[in-house]
Amino acid sequence: MEKTLYPLNVGQMLQYLPIRETGTQRCCNISVFSGLQFEIDFDLLKRCIKDEFKRYECLRLRFTAPDEDGNVQQYIADRDDREVPYLDLSNMTMKEADAYLQEKTFEEFNDPDIPMVEITMVRMPEGYNGMYIHIDHRLVDSSGLIVMVNDIMELYCHYRFGSEYPKPLASFEEVLISDLKKAQNTKRQAKDEKFWHDYLTEDGEPIYADIRGPRILQESRRNHGDKSLRVADVETKDRSVGVADFHLEPEATQQLLDFCAMHSVSMTNLILLAMRTYLSKTNGGQEDITLRNFVSRRSTMAEWTCGGSRVLSFPCRTIISPDTEFLDALYELQNVQNKVYLHCNYDPIAVDKMLKDLYGAPDKTEYISMSLTYQPMPVRVQNEHLVGIKTRSVWYPNGAATKQIYLTVTHSSNDGGLIFDYHYQKAVLSYDDIQKLYYYMMKMMFRGVREPDVTIGELISTT
Image (cartoon, rainbow, N blue to C red; front, side, top):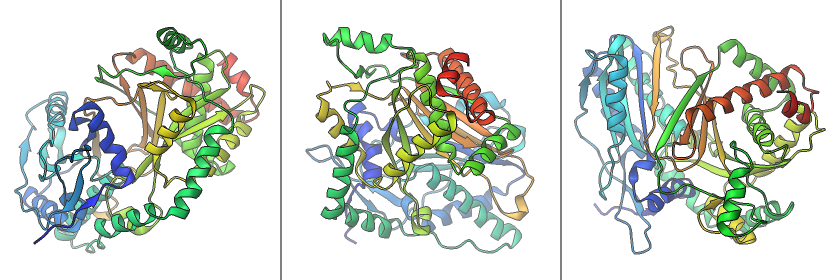
């Protein structure tokens, strides 16, 4: 049967671009262990995983070889009947088992027209059993991965305990066709383009801020012989990644959630405010701060359950004076974000290009040093037959840092507390740098929650 080829959508293209820039597919991989402290019937789990390849269309995505412009196309294979591998790591320590799976994370899907996902059943130490999922980011983002894990376990509970068969998942192909059609809407594109042009020019050129202080921008100015330069050089040679994870207790997490509910603000914006306030502190009170926020385009049920990479990232620029009270600053940031959300279907690569073209930024420079993804949905099996069973979810870094600091905030699958997962470029930052960043983010955030009328200037000078 002749295969139908489609271009990548904007979310997939955002993931593919680093492959072209770095020359390695590894930077596009997601690798996760998800398991339960529970004796699993692995033969039954194998059946469920095989069913998932039929149910979740995106798992059967294949990519063609790059054309002369470096672009690839995609198609959906009719079937994927591969055997599901099994690993027994139960005789190792947990540290050894994690190290083994971490090493597997570096494996690449390099050839055209091959499966871009491998799901391995794993028996882990300490009684944990589950799946190691190694997958190309163009097939799923974190939300799509969570949908997949939950669907597999719903299938397991159906076959094992007789619970209701899970509802069908949406067709990736149908949603992709809709995405591509929207991208061809010239009237909508023109409206979005005008918004982004106005947004990027309203306050003039942004200026870089780094957690190491203004010396980073000064070094770039010297390197380029331009005392007025407002962008900084980025590390492109050594992309080795460091990881720093911090767990916020559930009681403290609930304080933040209650504050957000009381004041009708989002957790994303609360975290962004803490990030920008620390950058302001380390840069002598700089008022003009730009961050990068990742937005998940999943507003319909079909978009929620179709898989694919539907995450786009856009600059979030705020200019906040030191006499602004914490809550007012939060509303200012949220107002900016609300405007951006109305135009978040636009191509983020085009936005970045527009920004650099507007101000003539040199190659391999950046206005933004930190990025954020907030994932409100934990990898947690909801089925009543598995309630109370301890879970374990581990996201293994792919070894290639394409951003200086990329913070992913999720909720623990066990206690609901926030997990702050920082991936950073080891060539320019240390664990101590990130630990300090987290420490001050928490101090600033919780003081602002306790004292919403504290000014940003006070937070910076006394925290």
